[in-house]
Length: 220
Image (cartoon, rainbow, N blue to C red; front, side):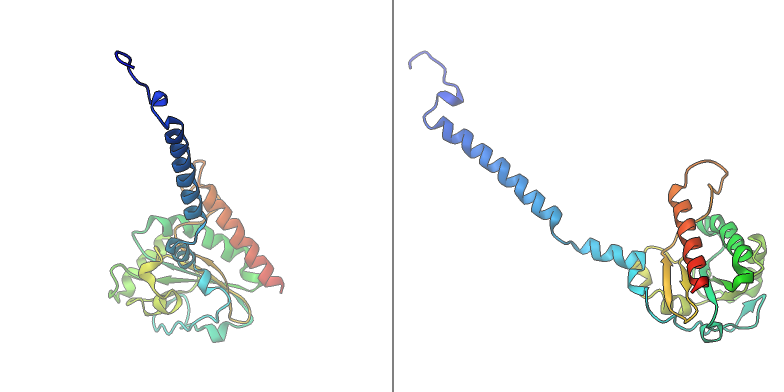
C-alpha cells in the first residue's frame, strides 16, 4: 500500500460507510415526510383566519346606535331576509375595491330580499364622528344602511380574537333564520380588477362564490 493514495472505497468497511450514508439520507427524507403530514399549529390558525369557526353560529347583535340611510337595525328584526354585512373603513384600498361589488349585489338582489349593510369601523378605534362616516360612505357611493362601530364592539362580537384573524374588513352572509352561512375573511372581492386591468382571479372567484351563496339562500 506504500506510495499509493487511498480512496474512500479502498478503505476497510468502505461499503458500510456508503450504506450508512444512504441510510441517513433515507431516514432524513422519512422524517421530513412525517413532519409535512403531521398537524401544525399554523393549520388551526389558518382556520381561524378564514372564519370557519363562525359558520353555523347565530349572528350576534349589532347594538349600534348611529346609522346612515336607515334607522338603527338589529339582526332579530331582519329575520326573513338574507343579509350581506361588510365591515369597512376609509383609507382602506381593499374596502374601496370591494365597494362596487357591494353596490352591484344590492342592485341585483335588493328587490328579492337581500339587505346589504356596511359597518364603518374607524382606524384607530374611538372616533365617533358621523361626519367622517358620512363622507366616506358618499365617496364609495353607498346608499344602503351604514352603521358606525366606532369602538369596534360589534366587530369583536362578530369577529372575536380579531388580532389573530389578519383582517378587520370581514364580510358575512346571514340566512333568513339569522344564521351565519358564509364568511369572507377580509381583503377584496369584485368581478374585475379594481384598476381595470387583468388579474385579481381570487377576487373574482370570491365574488362569484358570494353571489352564488346569496342566490341560493334567497331561494331557500
